[in-house]
Image: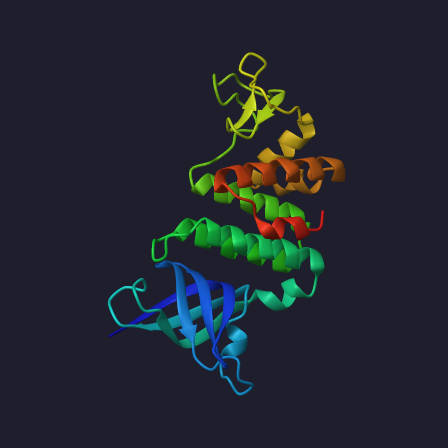
Length: 248
């Protein structure tokens, strides 16, 4: 029997029995973890409200072995709030739908339970903090998170140099299947021709250039979101259900 303590973000909850829940979290040290939280659906629960999606928490698990992955789910025994992002996110539809897509993305990129995913965890915490603050448009924060999640998982797209021959950009064509920008000689069937401003915006979101991103026109942001969604879904091999509800 082992007690393990970590901090994490609540990704999802599922009802279990009459009063319990299964909580899915992305943690700093132990990756994605599923645990049972006893009695959290009771009105007198001491920490039920702390285990809601978007919550950043310090959590303690009780497990039968030395790991949080195994035949039996861990038991969540103690929770302390680090940052209650949910309250500021769920009160706004744009933030809520963007945040929901972030949680789904983080879960999909960490499908192997117990496998350390520190970079993905830090990206999610930073994105939720930015989203909750309201300093940038929610759809831009989401696209930045998606692009950086792709990058830390080995799928970084190029929005400037040709991904095939390395010809310095800007280049006109873009291919989801090939990995990004293409020159005229390397163009493949199915390539699209986004506006130069759209590619500049996506490059800014990937690098964290918010001054450029915030100054973009809505039409370029919409085009960029379409490219990002197609790129993410190509590499995840199936669509993100929550993206269809994101407010553009």
